[in-house]
Length: 413
Image 1 (cartoon, rainbow, N blue to C red):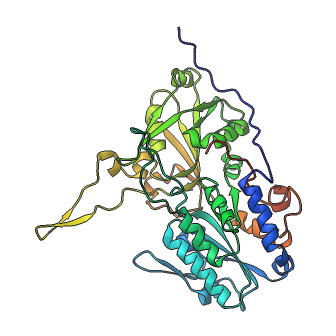
Image 2: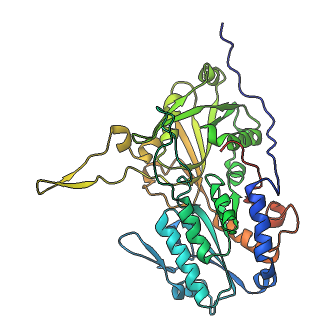
Image 3: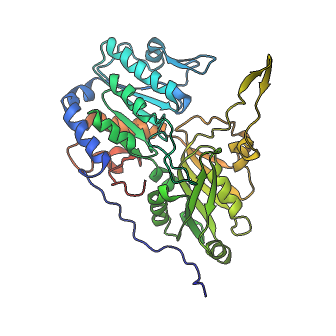
């Protein structure tokens, strides 16, 4: 007789280290490379919301400091940026806030940093609420053959581009710390900022009875465990398998008896992730829970909401032909995938500008703004430039924000 499924029991005590974690190593490099600019940062610095990527809203002036061309390229204009931020002269230290969702945005950030330095700025530090090419950090494995797929990885190029003209980078909720590691190889500090804690605190889910946390895949185990401990609720971890060769459609593998346990205990399911990209995982989870749960709550720092790219256009015998999407699943938009009665709420930040129109699911979406949190981080950094204690960028009573430097040693990613 098969034993009845029970939720996982565990103690979530992540290993925090200034020497073993990538965040700790980047922190040390930051101090070594940039420590001498401490007085300059406290006396002559500014923060610029560049609106690159259009993620974090900047200054409420029409046009701001960003020129958006019809081809989608974003080109900052320093004169307009200074005007919109009330800067009569350029300070010696500038923090650039940007949402670098793709490579064009990385070029825009690097180009702005170069231009600022050519105009006398000494130190330029971007705070990226999204970093392009984060998923292109390693070769994926073909689930059928077990062999590495022969594809190009591009995160190195993104890091190298930023390292040319920037002095350091902060990245909110990176998909992994691979970019931090690549930065260290170039003697370039990339500091990972953990953003999930902010959403957990703002969720208000602590009072929901019979709540269960669902970890959507192996790579997000730590986030799921953190959420389960925060909510003081059971944890269910599922396995996700993607068909990476043909569109990336995910299949969720449920532990035997787990969904029945959710149904029998009248559970509300909350699932956490770093980002919503095509929403395929959440779509599969919601479908799999049909008939087993009252509702599903989703927490994700970044709502990218990318859909199937527009159909390719090819020429055959002198005729222009549109090639339709590969299959019905790929043609279904991310918003359609999330617009299901079972999904009750989607809690996100404004870290990125969604690539899809969220209007059809507006009643489900709740957004936490990162702007005041980032302003608090910069305000703290100006007067605490050098990491002298272990609590540097980690104590909300000091920083004024629940965003914090991630010093956890990666084990599951």
